[in-house]
Image (cartoon, rainbow, N blue to C red; front, side, top):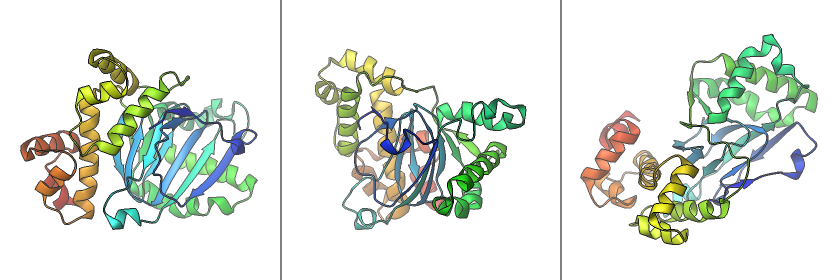
Length: 285
């Protein structure tokens, strides 16, 4: 997954842009940019990466990503026809902090929005109750005039700043201001994303990065804030949670499907990352 600094042409001279994406994200563009981004998933499933957070996403996913915070929503191709043929409908609002005027949010009446902007450097995920309430507004956003979009966005940001139904995603500040070493992390993360179901060793990924194992461990930890093993387990378990929800496979079958040869280790890792056993997780859905 390549970590790149994006400067889309359509945002160079605009403070607020709206994109309605209807095609799956199957590439590996782990990216960041200078704008804030409010991403709403109306239809789609997959894995999202925000800073050092790795999570499953599904319809109703609503996340605010701050400037320069690496992120990626990835629809993973698989042998599951339901997933491969799944429709996608995502609303993406990309905006600068001065979208309604310079220093607007420094005024005391906008204190809570300003605080939310500061928290967005970690990424903020809002609960389904919030996204359900804002669903129609977000789906109709692209139809509004430029003036109406600015007014509506301010209203949405106010609603989001007032809710307690939210979760901070990245455990640390992962903002990037240069793309140094982006080619190496691109190669490694893409390899993990494509091969997590196989037996991937530390030596394998170190060789891919053309580094010694010790150097690679330091590099990967500095770049992702997680050890290679921890990151690999999270990718595997997040994909396992998707299979448990969308398929009638047994827990044992899911375990092998995402790369675990030991059902005991799978259960241990699943409980550690998801907070429950695979069986309990499936029964709670």
